[in-house]
Amino acid sequence: WRGFLMILCDFGNQTGGNRTSAMAFVCLPGVRVACAFYPRSIGQRYGRRDGQGPRRILRDMVMASGAAAQKADKAKREEAQTPSQLRQARLDKIDAMRGEGVNPFAYRFDRTHSASQLQDMYRDLKDGEEAQDSIEIAVAGRIMARRVFGKLAFFTLQDESGTVQLYLEKKRIDDAMQSGAFGQLKDWTDSGDIVGASGTAKRTEKGELSVYVKEWTMLTKSLLPLPDKFHGLTDVEKRYRQRHLDMVVNPSVRDTFRKRARITSAIRRFLDDRGFLEIETPSLHQVAGGAEARPFRTFHNALEMDLNLRIATELHLKRLVVGGFDKVYELGRVYRNEGVSTRHNPEFTSIEVYQAYVDYNDMMDLTEELVEHVAEEVLGTSEVDYQGTKITLSRPWRRVTMHDIVEEKSRIKFLDIQTTEEGKEAAIKAGVSESALEHCKTVGQVLNVCFEELCESTIVQPTFVIDYPLEISPLAKPHRTKPGMVERFEMFAVGRETANSFSELTDPVDQRARFDEQAAKKAAGDEEACDVDEEFLSALETGLPPAGGLGIGIDRLVMLLTNSPSIRDVIAFPALRSQTSQG
Image (cartoon, rainbow, N blue to C red):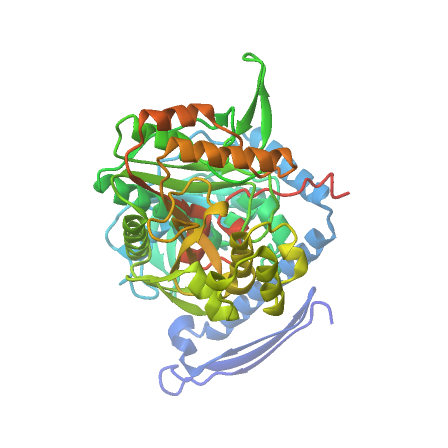
């Protein structure tokens, strides 16, 4: 059957050629059967009166079938090649370009439009029309797909804003550049290359907006092929490890990080507009404080001292309030030497906010106002979809004490419990495991474990859980009406803690006593307990005005606002186990 061609035609010309129709079957090398049916209106395309319709049909069938065969053969050859062979083939193309005096790694390119700008400018351009505005267009981006048909080629070009098609015609390019320029385009380019192209706007018969290219130039020759377009980059571990590739082939990933940037910018503007100042604090601390967490340790050679990467920005920011700044914040990275999960990464982004002369009630108001504002500004709505559930961020949010929500879920009235053992027995009956209660020494600690085990994952809509046990809140002010409790809240949504806040402890004597308790826990083997920070205590003795403090986990907030199930989806380069250690 190789080379055999059969055409079955039925050409009618009784009414000016308007009834021309044909069916063709083609068998060519590399193609079993190619079949095309041309409707009665075919005469409009192939000429109704010149008798050339059948010949043109035959010509197009042969060209299309031949191109299909070539494409199939090329795909088979590439599939058979190893990654090193594919890379070498591209290196050979670089040598060929340099041999022709062409630099495969350009210095610059003058772009006039982005893909999205072109889509907006020519949204009214009709199918099959070329723009008559004579605007010269210059675009640049990465080739995501190549389709070559003899003297015609179509490339899908992707830039940061989206995609646009390059319509590449041999005669037009060779006339504008030089004879052979179109051939070089076919020979030298591959998917993944970054190219520049100039020409005019045109919409194809199929409705695809295109740049009708006159000239093209290689900007960066890619040595590695893009992932197969049908299977894509589906290995989750590889997506995180090669995030640059993930962003190239998955536009939704770029959109997530674009939204993340807008979220952090909106947060800063919100606070700046309300008189807050962002002041940077040290990342290297002699004493790791401000949270209960295991720090990363390092050593400063010149100063000959052990240091810790910060686990929080809290203590330095409160020292700024002591120094006379009434409204301060810092948005930045903190580091905790802890496990990795869908909601934990050893280095993460938080914002801590401190304001003089307010308490945790004011911080609740600030939190819900800030989050609602950011959602409206970035997403245009205060209602978001998270993994199929509608989350309403508009104010006011529910406020419930830890005692009350635990009682709702377990029917345990911790206010009536007198001893730790009594609390543990009630917790076990409610479904809390004995192992989770193993290290609890007080009723307050048992209450907190019951909340974490029985309640936290059930909180879907934004909720402030308020009034925590004193023993788990070493930096919060004692509750003014509830003995053994502190004025503290955490904000939960979709089963996760997203914010934490106190009425700040301003009594230096009380603060020292709590630091001493933490130091004793650390001496007993608790690596997450904090040390005594004498410099912070000295600042408190100078006098910290009444103040409210707030910390928000930026990564978790971005997860909520971008419908991302894992913290790794919103951190551009998350922590991963080294491939060497994986064996």
